[in-house]
Image (cartoon, rainbow, N blue to C red; front, side, top):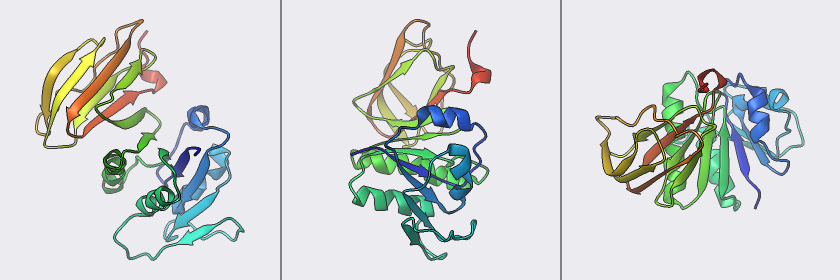
Length: 213
């Protein structure tokens, strides 16, 4: 199936970069306040999901799932589970990193949920691509300014980093000591990161201000 893009209500300041990531056949899901991004992104919704506590419910023929305000999951989480049930296996999240730290952390752990289900997904914000590293590994091109790895589990074991300024071999990172921040790909190389056990967050910095000269 084509990819599912889920749009939340956090601010997006760089719509031009977002457009570079979008595909013509993306299935677009806008969650409540994420509807404010329709014009900036330049994509109409295929599905709207929300309790509409942060955006007026639109009068539209587009399929809309109206949620109660009092519920256990967030609009974004509900949208993700709905789209998994519809058969989508590849996800991009926009407008999901913002001022609400509780929502931001909740959205990061949606990536963990996807990993446990054997599905793919990443979050794109104004500064970075954010994903979870699995045992298959992730390639990081030298176009990225920097990259960081952080343990979302108490301990992440069997971490390998190749072709980076700070390589690792069968290393561990504990949640209480995040020493994997601000690594760099060796110029002209493609770095590789893989992990054998645990949830390792990978942040690839794309913000142009940070591009190495």
